Image (tube, rainbow, N blue to C red; front, top):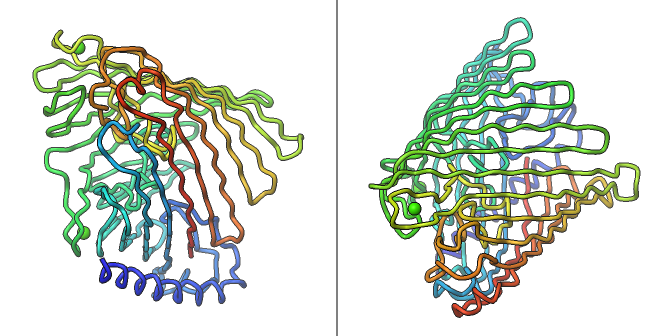
Length: 451
Ligand SMILES: [Ca+2]
Ligand SMILES: [Ca+2]
């Protein structure tokens, strides 16, 4: 433990000295892009900031960059107190450094290395610790013609595709990584994407991460944009080995078909999505579906420019465990933080009906408050938490799970600094209490530096 803390502190010290020395010299940066979670997407080609846009040859440039995040998390009555997990608090440290080598307009190599530590956590997660490893290492080949463009990306990479699934897992200390190929095409109002990837299993040693055996995702989507609307069709095939769902651990292979649409009109913005799943879970057939609908009203001229969103998120549950058909929805790579970072709610067997208010008291500060009601569509199926973890004994009884408030803030006191916090809980239903459970509560606070 002491050695672990010393090693973590030493790394943090050298990293901070490095970051501060860069920050001190970067005031004169010109044409610097917005710093993004997707560091590869930043265009530094017009910048004279230190360590960016360094010419190596007549047609060769390199950008260097780094990220650090320290995040405190605390969980009280985790998983409704029904899985034997005790109250827990811990500190995460994420250190990343990347090089972006650009060869002309048509090729680039992006390599990102990371070191990750968590201290003080009693029940560690597989996304906590990694002494040193390759987070991303990919080659991009780009082409452009008549206003259209195409990109082939090959290698280890992150995916952050949709609001509710295939997300990068940024709330965890270590993000999700994949190995494979991804092809993106932009042509006028059309965007199309096809990918075939294997998820990477995080291993705590140095340069020892490798693909998850038996897990594979392939598929893609097509989006058509209109003047103030968009329409999308998607298809993904996801295979998982020994996947535990609805009380049965089996190989799971499910194909997800979906359509989504969004539109804006004046201060209103609407979005919907519907997804069907079919495939196999062991000896059972999979027949499941998920859906989302949301409507936002913005008040751009009012103080703090607030907006109000009403939304419903749905994931089907299994009505009968003995009928040979598994109806529990299990989205490919779910974005847990869609509900909250507390992990109280999963996309499986869920109806979340929520009202959210967002406001910007200042251009650098965003506040969000959400109140959600949580129900199960099928009382014959479990209550699920985290990704797809079933709460023991939760089959049967009332559908209502509880009321979940959430408060969040995001503050950018400087261009290179992001401070975030979240508090959330569930006022658990009588049904949860009758099982011996209670009200789970979660809070986090993080400071992130980026160069
Ligand atoms: Ca490793
Ligand atoms: Ca069934």
